[in-house]
Length: 400
Image (cartoon, rainbow, N blue to C red; front, side, top):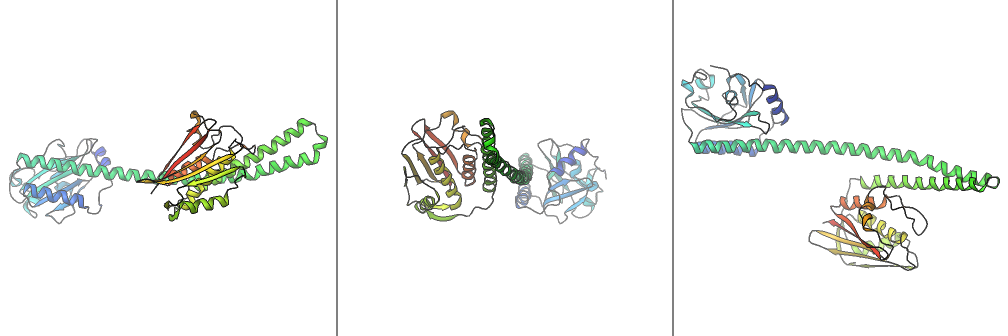
């Protein structure tokens, strides 16, 4: 018996095999189907998907044999991987000097014929073989060889799919862990910033009340600016905290409700000025989604439509309609409109247009970024249509 030497690239080959994480895995139907097909096509009793490890050959799938693995020194497949571009055949094992005294030839399963197609991965490394065996000498027809090659390619394709799926699962887990770490970091930093900002605002207010009469106008203005800036910082921090809690919350609870009922709830939560009219269409539309997320999105858009409206008489129109794969909503206003160059930017976190609202407050650049994330969380998208001086319409969908 002649033991097969190890390939020159054995270290690389073994490393490549281990990347698949398939050794000692449980039986899987897609591989068992392939070995059955191989045995049937060739009309032989034994078919194996064999992987060559350091000191053993391990069987991922097998037909007609009970063993799960054997020592590598006894392996026909260890010879086959030395010529990865060919189908390795042994027409008569009993007369072949490499195998005539092999225990698997002289004893069970009494191999008389062997043919193995190397399982070569995308980096050119032979991982093992798809092989067939007979108890007597035999030959393969050209069509049978081609069929075995095709089946071997299918085995490798399955290996690659499973490896890439595992890589994606690992990447997803790493991203989730990183996201959780970043979320916690943002929450801690924002929370820790809130207290000193509040203290700074309070100190500025106290200094102005206690010493305002003895300070010149410029000093009073400086303290007022310090107080306003501190309040703005607190508002920003609160926005970041809310964005973190809202966007990264994992639980989505869906329920059945009508759009009109959601609007009724919204009207109780929004302070609509007397000079504004708020109307809605599609109120009878039956919806099945997260009521709380949809309400939060509508609240943000309606509040913006009020705060940034520059007209004496404000008009807000809410609409809902059903489409084949999603629900479609819109919030329209007759406000100042948004320039085309700003319509993507407004959805970016911490990006503002630098304008003040009707109450003389500046935005934080958090609200619409949160809205976008919430809509995407419900498998939807959001965009804005606008004409400067006429008004804007925010249109968003959510998946069913």
